[in-house]
Length: 159
Image 1: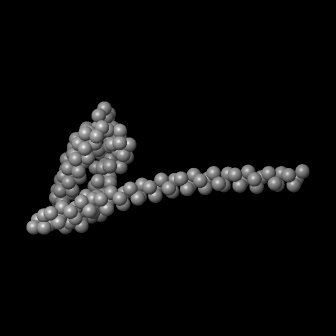
Image 2: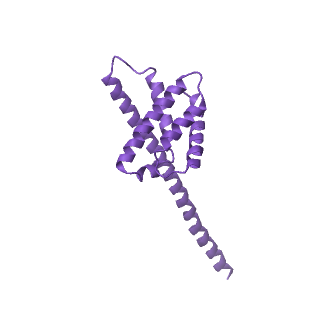
Image 3: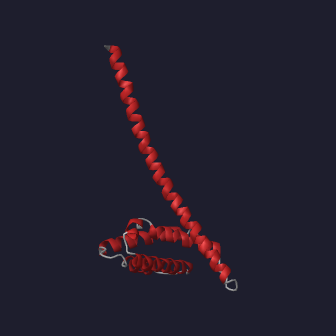
């Protein structure tokens, strides 16, 4: 009988370990998907900016790599957590939301170039953009705008 108990315990341990390992694998796969989507967005944005530079060679973007990197970082911050909401919008609403989002990124990027600006301006820009989501709670808007503005301020010094 002592031999039977020693056989049962390793079998239970072997079953628990793979379950823990599969959860770790799932979490790492999700993180990998998030990172790859960020890199995909970065490459798309940089390709778009290169096309713009080629169309307007007389007027090159000032500090284009610096501006591009910061614009991509701002875009990633603004779009974080909104993928599901964006996918549930109608096609016309998606286009309007995307266009307003790009304008918001550009305006925020220009604001960050200035030596002096008010964070309330950035919060207002983000809030106005998020208002395009139909049926959104105004408290969610305010909270999300403040969180995203604080994240943007943190990256300001990095660029």
